[in-house]
Image (tube, rainbow, N blue to C red; front, side, top):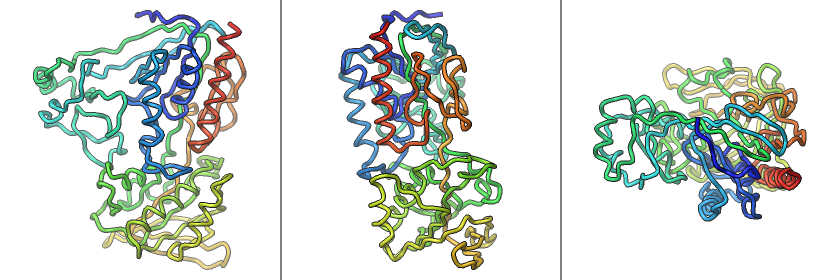
Length: 422
């Protein structure tokens, strides 16, 4: 077991998405030591996977690059990627946190020169693109990944081909035999910012996700629309590469439903409106239909909704579709249901259907905190207790990016208070 030599007056931030980045830099820039732990091989979380985000419809590079520079230039922040908290002991002001750092199989010498990727002939499903495309088994995790270091697929690392690549690396950065490390870290306070996972749309059997080729999800669509995504930013059907000229978005896919997620995730309506603009900007004659229960554009975002509503090529149908079917000849998904305003039944074919799935907090899935430190609400979100562990961002509620940043700035202040008291 390795021991970390960090002083005990340290703040641990768990999660390196926008929430965790915010908490880390805000605390460090006023003079506190911070350790940032992230399970992925890169920082940036879900924001890094989005094509554009509110309020300015910026690309992820806009907000993330600023935070990466703040981390890069601040010696008070230590970062562990591919790392997960496995145990928390102690109490407020005096925690010992056990972290498992999984093998990257590429060490700190890596210069991201790309020699290894050029020589590698093995491809795997690309997790950054939700397995919608292939990527080399050793690679930069994504275009703007930070830290700028390659990562090797753990299964590929066991192969003879991986050992051959290690010999080709000009700086000897590849270590196929790298093993996991366990690190015990003493800290005074903890900020838990482990983010969210898109709800698994395959659980909604009536909508056929995973079976019907041209039924997608909102997060998948973000990658499809991105120029570094699986189609180079061209919005086309997965089944045949056909341009999408008639598309439907189904709101609350699995949300506000006691069979799945009982709550509203706040951002899904806006996400579909935004994605409708992706389609309309790329194809000026395209038709878009949005099926909704209620339309929710929180706070100042209502102006964006009003703008989208002026587009005559976007149709709004108040309805929760009952099911989807697929035309076996054309692979067109067919949306079936009833318009609740007119009472008319419909069975309408589209080139593609996008399911607006909600946010499932990782504290309810794979990033739980021991109950002695926090309590949870009925949906698995953390209810803060003020005992040295403070949650922020989507660990506390479904939030848009701006709200998550505000939440995490407050969490940083709470963490500093614990350090000062100690």
